[in-house]
Length: 620
Image (cartoon, rainbow, N blue to C red; front, side, top):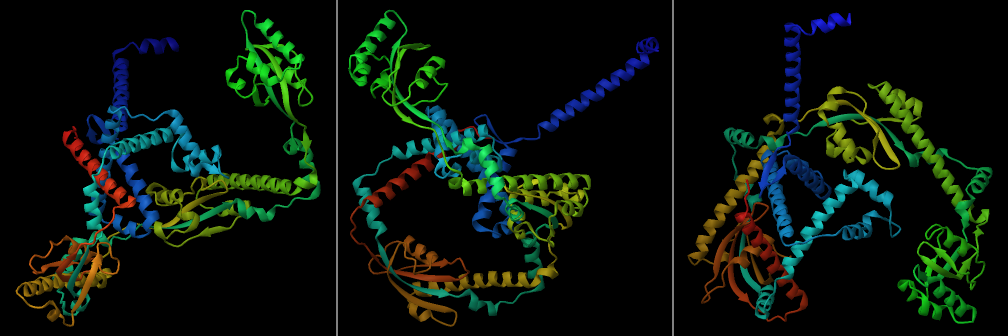
């Protein structure tokens, strides 16, 4: 049969078929290669690409940061496509600036060493427990943030390099004395002005809306009224802390644990040593014997160390090597040290790989075992935690296995593991609370593929003591609400908008009346409130910030002629302002003020350098 196959494979038909198979694999391979290149570059900065993936990661990180800081309002903003586009454009510009700074820092020879990176990581409070660096905490937080240790070190190196780069630029700036004095004078300046505030709220009653206006407003802003995706979830929560109630330990178990782990409660004997070293070479043994003779004759160990020891580092401290650890200096050294029984004992001369030694035992602490009663509570806590960990892992295993074997329900897993099956009604991502509101469960619950499958998730670990399995039981995709659903809201928004326009128009008309000589006090009516503001400081929080800032942008009045302008406030009101006087108060230049000036100058220098770098760079 094999011969017939071999003969057949030599025919024309077989070769044609083989060619087609090869072509198919070739095309498939090319397709895979093309697909693998999906991570396209969105910007190129002097030949260095900023990829779509890098942009998306930066976008998600900034989005999460804003969500933590400002809450649900962020998701409402993100529903606006134009806002998201501008938001991403700002992030992309930031990535371009960071890449330019990285390149310039490299050209300037700014480097961050591995030792600096290590020191920074060890000193970061996020990675510490009880004031000390904890490697387990470090690794756990990196995993949670999606970093490997190598990736985090590279990220930290980039951040520290940019920080040094910025600091070097800031440090190169300086401010002259007259500039500090001018800044202090401007900073302490006050202004007196009158204002006529037009209330847009009062003008809302005069606004008349047409159906055409409402429809047009809806058409232009309907994406702002897009609902968020909603999902209903059922889930099993495995909480190690909740398992503590099922754990109990008795006296016998505590005593057994104590006996089995007696080493944990034993303070091992400790030896502190000092030594004299003569490195191997001509006359080395003769020299160390001479040192031993000096000791035998009654010379102090410290004086002999100073005269004979070639270990210059320890010799500065009387030969001190601090507390002895077995295995560090080799068998010969260990044997000599362990033969010394009490503080003050001195060994005979012995030889190691580094040369000839004499060792002195400077301090000795005997091994001591802490009595059971003194560590009983500690053992109870440790043993209870071990049992909790066992129950936690056991529950995780049961839930994981059954959730996989019976993928379309969690009822069986709940029954076998003895856990409560919990559920939610339809909720947006922002409405999910507590454990479900964590980043990983939210990402999983709102994943389109996962929703369409309708199956149980894998085990999701939230922390070292909390994990869960979930499934989506119902979902409501995001949609643009119909006009009928939101007409009242649109009418309110459009009314506010038109009232703000009316307020601005009225403010412009009132300003013209003031410029023509009419008193600002005469402008008051049911929609206009006139007030006088005397000696208002540049950062006075007792007045409207929009109006105050507009007043400080006006020129100083000349020949008693007030400066008049209009300003719109953030809540839709508008105002006419009349600046009557500028009051300059002499101010001493204090250190904080000088630092503020220097910081402003430094920031301006950095901004100017960034703009110049952009103009000179090859950015595509």
